[in-house]
Length: 626
Image 1 (cartoon, rainbow, N blue to C red):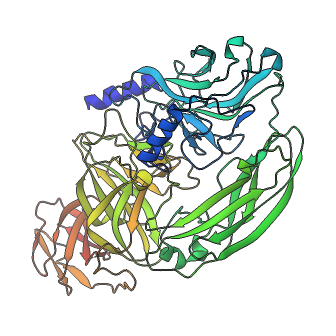
Image 2 (cartoon, helix red, strand yellow):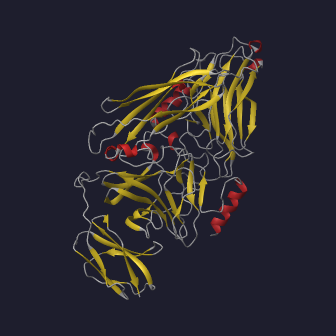
Image 3 (cartoon, rainbow, N blue to C red):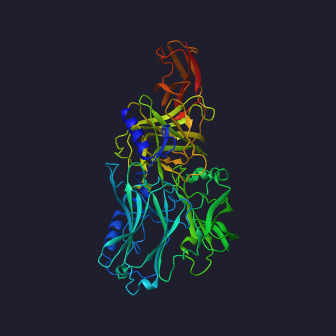
């Protein structure tokens, strides 16, 4: 308890704007950026890229220099940039002027905190340094300007007042000189900065500029976003027009609720899973209205089938305006290549360039709809962390609601963890699968299908950087709703465990939490990054033709005083769970036909007995304890 009180006081002192500080649900800093780990570069490729950049001693770039960070890699383009510490993305920014930004935070090039032991250090954090640029033939008379846009906070946590974003110019003696700085602040729209290059010491054949953020690490990520960097001559202070039209956001997913699911689950009910429309946004950065033609098309990567022929629309966009675009979705499918095969629908969004000088990199966006062996509400990238404030004597529970369109085998769970200071590798938790949770969708009790204890958080450099947990017994689930989540035990050191939170999730988050013995709908906006893993994990398990015949059973006597027995026909792999009206599990064990179950220690009242037959839950039955 003392630790929790100290933690809360520190949080109040360091981040006063955090909402609902004393509530049960909390949002914390990411503290770990998996996208800035090994993908898309391997460790060897990344090391080679750094070595290549370090040995670029001759000037290879000339004016104009332009960068809008449009692309799909999490690292800067090594042809333009000499370091790899910022995160290139389109998820950490708020209303960007063009798709793609460079995000500065307090995480290093492999996505972990610069200081993993102290959260009170003030230090230089991320840097973004241009490759050498030859401006030796130029002078102040050529009117060189460096312009860029910046935004504090974005969709992360804002940089504190003692934080700062800084710009340095490299002179001919090799020294980097500070030419611009701005202190941290809360969220603001992107602002453009114009910096003239006037000092004769900067006009040499290896000129470089460098952005650096200074981060007072504390409890925040100290987020800055930088975009649309231009260095050229013959400019003036009023040369702020961009003359560009481009996409500013990632298109929505084809699916209505999930972001990914197994293709066999989709194929069983495509009409129910497909969103009615696609949405995106386009910005006109010209100073005048522009007539823009935009559209999209879709292809199945597995067999090349055309799912949607090109469909276009033409609209006049006012100057300096971002407008949403909407297209009806498509209901095409392909024959499943296999029961467990991965399927990808490639959706390509495009718009016409206004002029040959209009940057074209943001005129096309490819959005893959992936059908794989998991259920997901998140887009794979975390912007913040989600955690619970626990009471010392009560466990903390999370549960996320999922649905199946046909029976399937649940074989595990993938979880994205946010890093913590100090590290959270010692925080034990359980993974629990429920068919119902008390008070949700009319359920009167928790119905536990499977619980597995003594898991610990992991932070791997693996596929998607989720940590994969395998159930010791795969569970065959019927079509319909189930819940999957975690339990952090009471009276342990497992409080405030950070889970990745995708704040770009729009709509209900399907999440519930329980820290006082009652399930409560989550009020946090975003998707908690937990993914059930489905499919055949063992050769002898089949999910293709699973059928369920309701088991007949009864509890006797009812009411009961000291013991009760269960009468049923199926004798294989049968277990029971006894819960109170709050859904708390009080007794559990292997069920044996007609064997007495001792209930003498229970207080008089109403209870529920739940039976599991071969991994499938039955309908719970009510009984009275005298």
